[in-house]
Picture 1 (cartoon, rainbow, N blue to C red):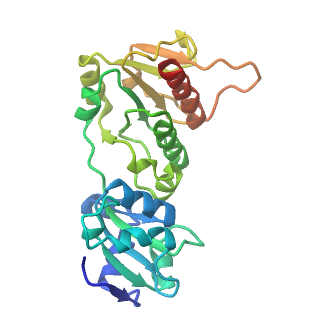
Picture 2 (cartoon, rainbow, N blue to C red):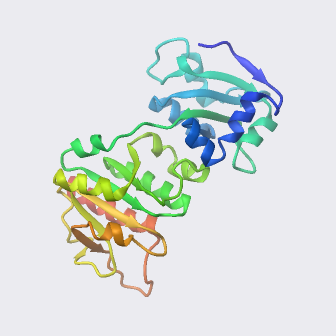
Length: 275
């Protein structure tokens, strides 16, 4: 374990580099992102994600929930990669400077973006994958990832034009699920034909659908495509799909929020596959 440090100045070069990670261009350049809050830092450490730094409040100390990771940092611990992580005590002002929330919790972490490849999804027999095409709200994207994790989906694929996966609100909305399953980013016009070549059926939501979400067979290898909140699935992606699905509604609402619609589809898929 590296020697414990403390930092009290916002002008410290380390702190400046952390603050820069609040911007997407710096996250992309460095391959790093900020994890905020006790639960998310705990999940990041537990998952084995490469965490470079855990910065905790100098006055409050290391949160109790994170003590096991700190205590085992000198060993090759099953709790995570604590032996590679630098634990730094910092002021409340530094945490606030790095945080995206008005009342931040007393800990942040600096972590490497998880590496995920579409190959692992293509190799999975009868894979269940959510494909996100142009969703703009970070809360929606985070909820979709969290739901995919909850039902045991094999992964999530995110197309170009979708909100940044490492947006602070997106990360918070996943509630740690970002660290539990593969999330692949890429060009859907390339990834989706590759999936079809591996026997995957592509199904998208559509108001002109050929299948009810309750009659569609999700037991086959299925990648479920959901689209932008206002425009739906893009024309380029829609042209690639094999099947279209609609969620029937008895009331007067015209549609569901994209995250809620995804939840309906995924839980029906789980029901067919496991119950």
